[in-house]
Each structure stands twice: as structure tokens, then as C-alpha cells.
Length: 183
Image (cartoon, rainbow, N blue to C red; front, side, top):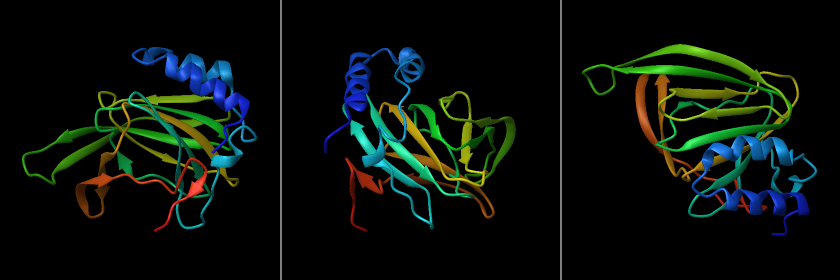
């Protein structure tokens, strides 16, 4: 897959930040990628939002997520990873929850601690010490976001309120390096 020159520059600069995740937000603002830069990694589906792998190495995982109106993630953690979401187009609502675990395995309480609406060129950051969260496209138009995880995230814990349960979910991609995957 050929990356646009701006994506190549971004990935080179990101690789240089290995071990310095505190600079990722600054890099995202500096580079300011657009949907034109990422067009080879943008795939929408009516049934679900898509996770499209753009790049990964031993320090970083970079994805585009493509959202139709009404699509959202389950409430989830990040399995020890740090996560940045940079909005390319549209808007996304993020709700953060504090989790209180109770004695029985499926007993937990979620308390909403924050809610924000993100617009293009804005950044959201999360890690597990901040809580768990949900992202949703509550707008009329489609949304595109660029996500960076460090270290890469292969699974996470989903929280469901109806029925009340948690489960570990292995994450998968709709596409990788610009090619839609089978199944």
C-alpha cells in the first residue's frame, strides 16, 4: 500500500516518538491529516463502524475508524494501552465512565464522569486509569477518526448493561493497509 506523502511524514515522525507518547497529541495537531490524505484507508459499512489498520510496529498501532450516523463502540477499556483519537471529519461524542467492581464476577457499577463532543482537528486521549469509554457518531453525517494506540491493542474488555456482563473481546480489522479483509 502506498501512503500519501503527508501520511509517510506522519508515520516517520510517529516512529521517532517511540518511548515518548506524551508528544503524540502535539504531533497530531502539527501534521493535521485530512480525509484526502487517508482516502486509501477509509471504508464505511452500514451495519457497523469499521476499524481500518493503517500501520503498526512494536510501539504504535494506527487506525482509521469510519462511522455512519448512529454507530458507536461498546463501553470498553484499553487493556493497558494509551489511546488517542483525532477527528478527521464529522463529530463524535465520547462518554467516560468510572468502573467500580463488586464481589461477584459480573457485578460492576458504571458512573459517568465526563462527556464531550469532538469536532475535526480535536483530540481525545484515554488510558485505563482515566476510566472506560464509549465513542458514538450522534451527528447526521458520517465521521472519520484516526486512532493511535501504544502499545498496540489486540483485545479489550466490553461492558454491557443489558444484560449486565463484561467480556474480553479480541479486536479485528475491517481492512489492513488499504485492503478489505475477508470474513
